[in-house]
Amino acid sequence: MVLSAPTASVADFTRFSTLQDWRRQIADLYAQVRALPPQAGWQQWRAARDRLFREHPQSPLAPERRAEFTGIACFPYDPVLRFEVGLVPAVDREAIPVEAGKDGLMRLVPYASTDGLAGPLGRELTLYWIAGYGGGTFLPFGDASNGCDTFAGGRYLLDTIKSADLGAKPDGRLILDFNFAYYPSCAYSEAWVCPLSPHENRLAVPIRGGERNRID
View 1: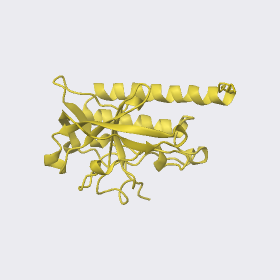
View 2: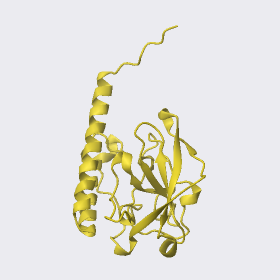
View 3: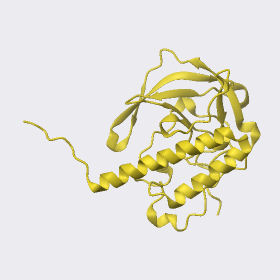
View 4: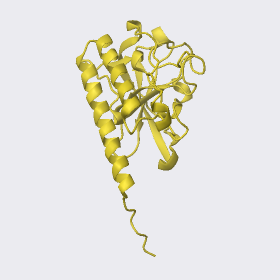
């Protein structure tokens, strides 16, 4: 029996084209952020994300919610939450399988740990490599604000597949600024399936920076 190859439709053309544009705009945004002073970059990040959520076809908001959307709620910028950290290899760590909806299982491969967060935040965080074509670095985290001030499933800090990356210093130290922590798309709609933070990346302290629940 010969199986026919899947074919694309006009709807696929529209969906893939708009997704490509969304990712291009996010990549451009983070390039702009890296070129600006931290707080100015954060203000640019907020304004651009508000516009994309309100206007772009690939917004994680359902179309009927976009008209009433007034902006993404964030904590005030706090320079104390910006860190430059070293990385150390994460050896002999098993990959973590994660359900990814229509894409099936994805594998998060622990490959590095931060060096510099244990003092201020109580523990180091693990960086994962998303196994698959191209791959990418992924840093989800949870903290004591989840389920109260922030989304119960945690937030993302680094996702290079989506170009969410603040870069590194010339000496290789990674820039992690929790003021840029953001919600996974599944926080906005059940139509999305997102990998959430493994237990090892859950901080016992609240991180009051980045995206937060709206206070009405």
